[in-house]
Image (cartoon, rainbow, N blue to C red):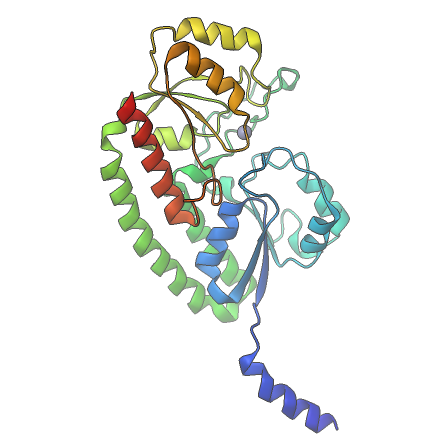
Length: 300
Ligand SMILES: [Zn+2]
Protein backbone atom coordinates (compact mmCIF):
# COMPACT_ATOMS: atom_id res chain seq x y z
CA UNK A 1 0.00 0.00 0.00
CA UNK A 2 2.79 2.35 0.97
CA UNK A 3 4.55 1.57 -2.30
CA UNK A 4 1.37 2.31 -4.21
CA UNK A 5 0.95 5.69 -2.51
CA UNK A 6 4.59 6.56 -3.25
CA UNK A 7 4.08 5.58 -6.89
CA UNK A 8 0.96 7.71 -7.11
CA UNK A 9 2.77 10.67 -5.54
CA UNK A 10 5.63 10.34 -7.99
CA UNK A 11 3.15 10.33 -10.86
CA UNK A 12 1.34 13.45 -9.75
CA UNK A 13 4.25 15.50 -8.45
CA UNK A 14 5.61 16.81 -11.78
CA UNK A 15 2.17 18.15 -12.62
CA UNK A 16 1.44 19.77 -9.29
CA UNK A 17 1.66 23.57 -9.24
CA UNK A 18 3.68 24.22 -6.17
CA UNK A 19 5.41 27.43 -5.19
CA UNK A 20 8.57 26.98 -3.15
CA UNK A 21 8.20 30.12 -1.11
CA UNK A 22 5.35 32.18 0.25
CA UNK A 23 6.13 35.88 0.23
CA UNK A 24 4.14 38.23 2.46
CA UNK A 25 4.54 41.78 1.14
CA UNK A 26 3.33 44.77 3.10
CA UNK A 27 2.67 46.77 -0.08
CA UNK A 28 1.67 45.78 -3.65
CA UNK A 29 4.95 46.96 -5.23
CA UNK A 30 6.95 44.41 -3.24
CA UNK A 31 4.52 41.61 -4.10
CA UNK A 32 4.89 42.59 -7.76
CA UNK A 33 8.68 42.60 -7.46
CA UNK A 34 8.61 39.18 -5.76
CA UNK A 35 6.59 37.89 -8.73
CA UNK A 36 9.18 39.28 -11.14
CA UNK A 37 12.17 37.81 -9.31
CA UNK A 38 10.54 34.67 -7.93
CA UNK A 39 8.45 33.69 -10.94
CA UNK A 40 6.63 30.40 -10.44
CA UNK A 41 8.78 29.57 -7.44
CA UNK A 42 7.06 32.23 -5.37
CA UNK A 43 3.51 32.81 -4.28
CA UNK A 44 3.12 36.43 -3.24
CA UNK A 45 0.50 38.20 -1.18
CA UNK A 46 0.15 41.90 -0.38
CA UNK A 47 -1.23 42.97 2.99
CA UNK A 48 -2.40 46.31 1.61
CA UNK A 49 -3.91 47.44 -1.66
CA UNK A 50 -3.03 50.53 -3.65
CA UNK A 51 -6.26 52.09 -2.45
CA UNK A 52 -5.22 51.92 1.21
CA UNK A 53 -2.81 54.16 3.10
CA UNK A 54 -0.01 51.78 4.13
CA UNK A 55 0.67 53.95 7.19
CA UNK A 56 -2.68 52.93 8.62
CA UNK A 57 -4.37 49.57 8.18
CA UNK A 58 -6.12 47.17 10.56
CA UNK A 59 -4.24 44.07 11.76
CA UNK A 60 -6.97 41.73 10.48
CA UNK A 61 -7.02 37.99 11.44
CA UNK A 62 -6.73 36.98 7.76
CA UNK A 63 -3.39 38.82 7.64
CA UNK A 64 -2.15 36.95 10.71
CA UNK A 65 -2.95 33.64 9.01
CA UNK A 66 -1.03 34.70 5.89
CA UNK A 67 1.94 35.83 7.95
CA UNK A 68 1.98 32.58 9.92
CA UNK A 69 2.59 30.62 6.70
CA UNK A 70 5.07 33.07 5.13
CA UNK A 71 8.68 32.23 4.29
CA UNK A 72 9.65 35.82 3.57
CA UNK A 73 8.27 39.20 4.64
CA UNK A 74 9.15 42.22 2.53
CA UNK A 75 8.03 45.69 3.56
CA UNK A 76 9.05 49.26 2.87
CA UNK A 77 10.19 49.74 6.46
CA UNK A 78 11.47 53.04 7.90
CA UNK A 79 8.42 52.94 10.17
CA UNK A 80 5.89 52.97 7.33
CA UNK A 81 4.18 49.92 8.86
CA UNK A 82 4.89 50.78 12.49
CA UNK A 83 1.17 51.02 13.27
CA UNK A 84 0.32 47.44 12.35
CA UNK A 85 3.17 45.13 11.34
CA UNK A 86 4.68 44.46 14.77
CA UNK A 87 1.25 43.51 16.15
CA UNK A 88 0.78 41.13 13.22
CA UNK A 89 4.22 39.59 13.67
CA UNK A 90 3.58 39.06 17.33
CA UNK A 91 0.25 37.35 16.78
CA UNK A 92 1.48 35.24 13.85
CA UNK A 93 4.32 33.87 15.98
CA UNK A 94 6.34 32.78 12.91
CA UNK A 95 9.98 32.70 13.94
CA UNK A 96 11.19 32.46 10.34
CA UNK A 97 10.08 35.98 9.47
CA UNK A 98 10.94 38.01 12.57
CA UNK A 99 13.05 41.18 12.13
CA UNK A 100 16.72 40.22 12.11
CA UNK A 101 16.14 36.87 10.40
CA UNK A 102 16.71 36.05 6.71
CA UNK A 103 12.95 35.84 6.31
CA UNK A 104 12.45 39.55 6.96
CA UNK A 105 13.54 42.44 4.75
CA UNK A 106 12.89 46.17 4.68
CA UNK A 107 13.26 47.53 1.17
CA UNK A 108 14.08 51.06 2.30
CA UNK A 109 17.15 49.84 4.19
CA UNK A 110 18.88 49.19 0.84
CA UNK A 111 18.54 52.71 -0.57
CA UNK A 112 19.49 56.21 0.46
CA UNK A 113 16.49 57.58 2.33
CA UNK A 114 15.79 61.29 2.19
CA UNK A 115 14.49 63.56 4.93
CA UNK A 116 15.85 61.54 7.85
CA UNK A 117 16.02 63.73 10.91
CA UNK A 118 17.45 63.44 14.38
CA UNK A 119 15.13 66.03 15.84
CA UNK A 120 11.76 64.41 15.61
CA UNK A 121 8.92 65.85 17.54
CA UNK A 122 6.33 63.15 17.20
CA UNK A 123 3.85 65.37 19.00
CA UNK A 124 3.88 67.35 15.78
CA UNK A 125 2.72 64.21 14.03
CA UNK A 126 5.68 63.58 11.74
CA UNK A 127 5.38 59.95 10.64
CA UNK A 128 8.66 59.84 8.70
CA UNK A 129 11.21 60.09 11.52
CA UNK A 130 13.60 57.57 9.93
CA UNK A 131 13.53 59.24 6.54
CA UNK A 132 10.95 59.00 3.81
CA UNK A 133 9.74 55.39 3.37
CA UNK A 134 7.92 55.84 0.03
CA UNK A 135 10.94 54.71 -1.98
CA UNK A 136 9.16 52.70 -4.69
CA UNK A 137 8.42 55.63 -6.99
CA UNK A 138 12.03 55.99 -8.11
CA UNK A 139 12.72 53.10 -10.50
CA UNK A 140 16.43 53.23 -9.63
CA UNK A 141 15.48 52.30 -6.06
CA UNK A 142 13.54 49.38 -7.49
CA UNK A 143 16.71 48.18 -9.24
CA UNK A 144 18.58 48.11 -5.95
CA UNK A 145 15.79 46.31 -4.10
CA UNK A 146 15.40 43.80 -6.96
CA UNK A 147 19.06 42.79 -6.54
CA UNK A 148 18.65 42.52 -2.76
CA UNK A 149 15.49 40.46 -3.12
CA UNK A 150 17.10 38.04 -5.57
CA UNK A 151 19.99 37.54 -3.12
CA UNK A 152 17.58 37.00 -0.25
CA UNK A 153 15.43 34.49 -2.11
CA UNK A 154 18.59 32.58 -2.98
CA UNK A 155 19.69 32.62 0.63
CA UNK A 156 16.49 31.10 1.99
CA UNK A 157 15.97 28.77 -0.98
CA UNK A 158 19.53 28.04 -2.26
CA UNK A 159 18.56 25.16 -4.54
CA UNK A 160 16.84 27.66 -6.85
CA UNK A 161 19.58 30.29 -6.90
CA UNK A 162 20.05 29.92 -10.65
CA UNK A 163 16.40 30.67 -11.33
CA UNK A 164 16.37 33.73 -9.08
CA UNK A 165 19.53 35.08 -10.73
CA UNK A 166 18.18 34.44 -14.23
CA UNK A 167 14.85 36.10 -13.38
CA UNK A 168 16.72 39.09 -11.93
CA UNK A 169 18.82 39.53 -15.05
CA UNK A 170 15.76 39.25 -17.26
CA UNK A 171 13.88 41.77 -15.15
CA UNK A 172 16.78 44.24 -15.07
CA UNK A 173 17.27 44.02 -18.84
CA UNK A 174 13.67 45.10 -19.38
CA UNK A 175 13.80 47.55 -16.46
CA UNK A 176 16.89 49.46 -17.66
CA UNK A 177 15.40 49.86 -21.14
CA UNK A 178 12.17 51.11 -19.57
CA UNK A 179 13.97 53.60 -17.32
CA UNK A 180 15.69 55.11 -20.36
CA UNK A 181 12.31 55.36 -22.11
CA UNK A 182 10.65 57.00 -19.06
CA UNK A 183 13.50 59.46 -18.64
CA UNK A 184 13.34 60.45 -22.29
CA UNK A 185 9.57 60.88 -22.14
CA UNK A 186 9.76 62.98 -18.97
CA UNK A 187 12.50 65.37 -20.05
CA UNK A 188 10.07 68.25 -20.44
CA UNK A 189 9.01 67.88 -16.79
CA UNK A 190 12.38 69.02 -15.43
CA UNK A 191 12.14 72.21 -13.44
CA UNK A 192 8.36 71.98 -13.02
CA UNK A 193 6.91 72.61 -9.56
CA UNK A 194 4.59 70.27 -7.68
CA UNK A 195 2.42 70.58 -4.60
CA UNK A 196 1.76 67.16 -3.07
CA UNK A 197 -0.86 66.02 -0.57
CA UNK A 198 1.48 63.84 1.53
CA UNK A 199 5.24 63.48 1.14
CA UNK A 200 4.67 60.33 -0.92
CA UNK A 201 6.47 61.53 -4.03
CA UNK A 202 9.88 62.87 -2.99
CA UNK A 203 11.75 60.06 -4.78
CA UNK A 204 9.67 60.38 -7.95
CA UNK A 205 10.08 64.16 -8.08
CA UNK A 206 13.79 63.93 -7.30
CA UNK A 207 14.26 61.41 -10.11
CA UNK A 208 12.41 63.53 -12.67
CA UNK A 209 13.87 66.88 -11.57
CA UNK A 210 10.53 68.28 -10.43
CA UNK A 211 10.62 70.63 -7.46
CA UNK A 212 8.32 69.95 -4.50
CA UNK A 213 7.18 73.42 -3.47
CA UNK A 214 4.58 72.56 -0.81
CA UNK A 215 2.52 69.81 0.82
CA UNK A 216 -1.18 69.89 1.65
CA UNK A 217 -0.28 68.25 4.96
CA UNK A 218 1.58 70.81 7.06
CA UNK A 219 3.38 67.92 8.78
CA UNK A 220 3.63 64.40 7.21
CA UNK A 221 0.75 62.42 8.65
CA UNK A 222 -1.46 65.26 9.82
CA UNK A 223 -4.52 65.89 7.62
CA UNK A 224 -4.55 69.21 5.72
CA UNK A 225 -5.97 71.97 7.91
CA UNK A 226 -8.13 74.88 6.78
CA UNK A 227 -5.49 77.33 8.03
CA UNK A 228 -2.69 75.65 6.08
CA UNK A 229 -4.79 75.39 2.91
CA UNK A 230 -5.78 79.01 3.09
CA UNK A 231 -2.12 79.99 3.51
CA UNK A 232 -1.28 77.89 0.42
CA UNK A 233 -4.03 79.65 -1.50
CA UNK A 234 -2.32 82.96 -0.85
CA UNK A 235 1.16 81.60 -1.52
CA UNK A 236 0.11 80.13 -4.88
CA UNK A 237 -2.49 82.72 -5.81
CA UNK A 238 -0.84 83.41 -9.14
CA UNK A 239 -0.35 79.74 -9.92
CA UNK A 240 3.34 79.47 -8.99
CA UNK A 241 3.15 75.69 -9.24
CA UNK A 242 2.37 73.37 -12.14
CA UNK A 243 0.48 70.50 -10.54
CA UNK A 244 -1.15 69.27 -7.33
CA UNK A 245 -0.63 65.53 -6.75
CA UNK A 246 -2.44 63.07 -4.50
CA UNK A 247 -2.55 59.29 -4.14
CA UNK A 248 -5.81 57.41 -4.89
CA UNK A 249 -6.59 56.87 -1.19
CA UNK A 250 -6.30 60.54 -0.24
CA UNK A 251 -9.46 62.62 -0.27
CA UNK A 252 -9.83 64.79 -3.34
CA UNK A 253 -11.38 67.60 -1.31
CA UNK A 254 -8.21 69.45 -0.28
CA UNK A 255 -6.47 69.36 -3.66
CA UNK A 256 -9.72 70.25 -5.45
CA UNK A 257 -10.23 73.18 -3.09
CA UNK A 258 -6.73 74.53 -3.74
CA UNK A 259 -7.00 73.84 -7.46
CA UNK A 260 -10.23 75.81 -7.75
CA UNK A 261 -8.70 78.83 -6.06
CA UNK A 262 -5.34 78.83 -7.82
CA UNK A 263 -6.05 77.31 -11.22
CA UNK A 264 -3.29 74.74 -10.67
CA UNK A 265 -4.43 71.36 -12.06
CA UNK A 266 -4.97 68.60 -9.48
CA UNK A 267 -4.26 64.98 -10.41
CA UNK A 268 -4.18 61.47 -8.97
CA UNK A 269 -1.07 59.35 -9.47
CA UNK A 270 -0.80 55.64 -8.67
CA UNK A 271 1.61 55.25 -5.76
CA UNK A 272 1.88 51.54 -6.39
CA UNK A 273 0.62 48.71 -8.59
CA UNK A 274 -3.18 48.77 -8.75
CA UNK A 275 -3.50 52.46 -7.93
CA UNK A 276 -5.09 53.17 -11.32
CA UNK A 277 -6.58 50.92 -13.99
CA UNK A 278 -3.45 51.39 -16.08
CA UNK A 279 -0.93 50.50 -13.35
CA UNK A 280 -1.21 46.72 -13.54
CA UNK A 281 2.46 45.87 -12.90
CA UNK A 282 5.71 47.66 -12.08
CA UNK A 283 6.29 48.65 -15.71
CA UNK A 284 2.83 50.06 -16.38
CA UNK A 285 2.94 51.77 -12.97
CA UNK A 286 5.66 54.10 -14.25
CA UNK A 287 4.12 54.31 -17.73
CA UNK A 288 0.94 55.59 -16.10
CA UNK A 289 2.71 57.99 -13.73
CA UNK A 290 4.68 59.63 -16.55
CA UNK A 291 1.62 59.80 -18.82
CA UNK A 292 -0.50 61.45 -16.13
CA UNK A 293 2.21 63.95 -15.18
CA UNK A 294 2.73 64.93 -18.80
CA UNK A 295 -0.99 65.23 -19.33
CA UNK A 296 -1.31 67.66 -16.43
CA UNK A 297 1.80 69.72 -17.26
CA UNK A 298 0.89 70.07 -20.93
CA UNK A 299 -2.31 71.78 -19.76
CA UNK A 300 -0.39 73.98 -17.35
ZN1 LIG B 1 4.29 58.71 4.48
